[in-house]
Length: 481
Image 1: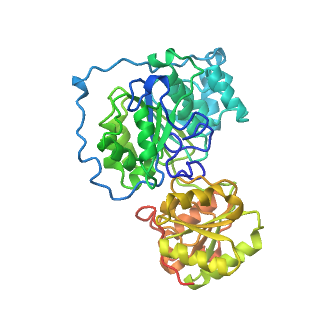
Image 2: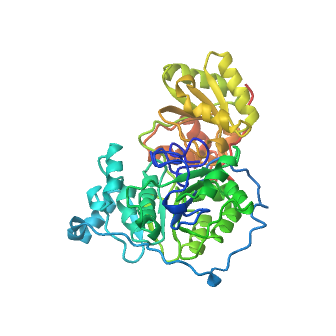
Image 3: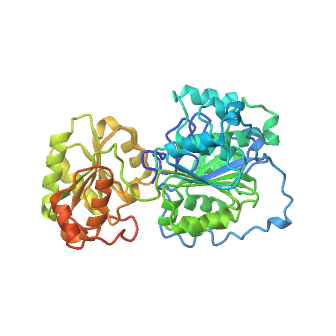
């Protein structure tokens, strides 16, 4: 999921980040044929592609892509394209390497690679073209985030790169702005100049294909896609990826966790081998490392923050140790004691059935609750997210939350405690007989973020509740309320 950072429709902005005006269907249009046909399905050149871990793609589609043959690009006449557009600002050139290293250390940034460029600390130092810089300034940003400061020079140099950074760190613009420059620099774009609009379209499941097909066939420069639906279009001949030169794999860990590795590998086989690839992930597990090793050669890597699991010190985290039967009663107490009618709340539940049951119970108790899960149509999901004033409390499954962008959240509740501690901890109901194996790890997270550790949780940890992360990102336990 692009949690607080993905497109609300399930496909995320240029592969997963989002929330900016550059997102799918945003200020740069929702498809159409710019630059003489664009990079996808048309006659132009220099397209970009992105894949996000958002919803809308079905699970278990292991047969997807079976009719697509790997392309032998050694027998293809590939049109040369530019990659390196980075012009180092004089202020960056004059900055001593020791100062750059000190800045990285202060921001908890670690870089790996040969010839890693120094960070740009202001938008002006990034040497962005005026048409890009002016749009950035309109958004009211005062300076780049740490991942943007280090990520922009890496991406603009045309090198493959891996970015490991938490959601909400600004990684979307870290790969999206270089993509715009990459597109506008190609030969076809030179005819029209930087003022031409960059056409993009979104491709995701759960909605009719007809409009997606029209956009793909008319030609666009950026395709924002979930893996399953993109492969569906490829198999039907609605587009091809032969002209893609800039590929973003965003939320790589989530996509692999959702079982999309075969689809990602099939998609990569359809793209020219000399493409530039940017892979973004919130974590750095072996599966992501293997994918990077196979598809990103001689890449830069930038990591912001620790690779160890940790909570956010700016978020008050509460673990309520209780019986299964007390969870609903305790939830009502937390909601009534801490919220006003203007606050928005997310409540995570393990199953779709449980999500509906909890929603009904909350509505009976006077809360304006709504449910979101995999059985809801795309139109229902859009309505739930886009009408926040009438939805102060949303019950949601973990799977449905992937690719969701919800602003102004006051409280996040894990009604069913997750099977793994990678999932956000805000207010969690911990049933010791079911969740005891994670007690020690949860206690360590609370200690690291200077939160209150309940005595009952400490007791559960001392009784042998440890054992690391559970299998996957599902949510454990049923409910009786």
